[in-house]
Length: 101
Image 1 (spheres, rainbow, N blue to C red):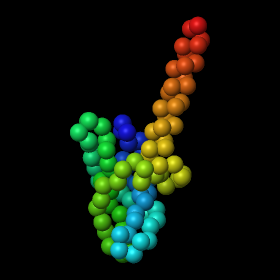
Image 2: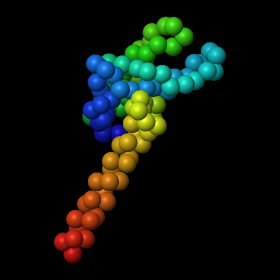
Image 3: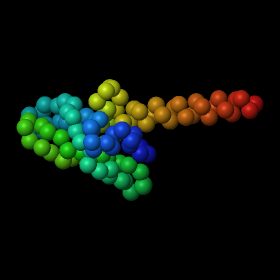
Image 4: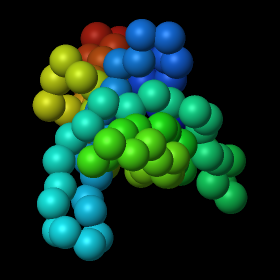
């Protein structure tokens, strides 16, 4: 993925929600979470975000991929934000190239 958006890493006034799926009951939903640490993959890039969250009155710590982490204020996951940022950067690069003609 690259790296997590900085606001997703705030431990004070946390900004994120994670999509939790309960294997026993089949229930699922987005819950508030507190980031604990970035988990780096073998390629040297962020692979997961370790977070702490509450589910059914119990506290859990779990690693989540970018498709299961989103900001509280929006509907976009970290992966969607990353893709959007790449598209914007590519568009800006194309405009700069066209301008130089």
